[in-house]
Image (cartoon, rainbow, N blue to C red; front, side):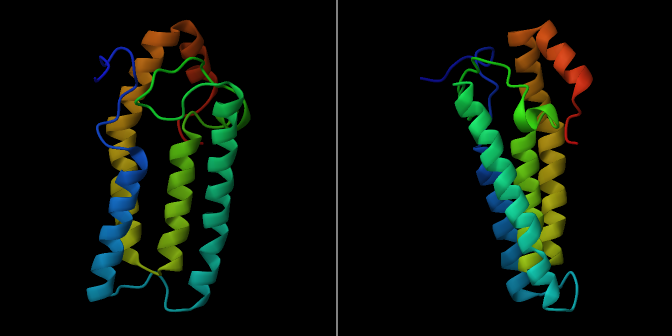
Length: 156
């Protein structure tokens, strides 16, 4: 049974799947018509840094959700407005973590196509998913969310 839109933030597709499909599409095109980000092997090594940072940020955000005993997935009702940990820096640290990991993978694969798909994924999230979640949080937490939104930026 699906919950009404007012009870959950709602995501038509799992968040990670959107990033994964963009990554997979970019890598697939790169296999047939490679366009490197930079013509050096070192770009691949450099990509490991954002990949590690993104994984760390995701783990930190996940731990904050766990500590507050509220669901991680936007398809489940939020029980608490998490405002500490990475959520004190960004209202969307999980999406930010996915973007940073994605950037790292674009460099590891040395693919300009993957970078283009990252831009598409970020635009989709910023214009479609994030506003949907913010409407839900405003309806659920009211003034607490308004105050949080005033002091913490959407991305960084």
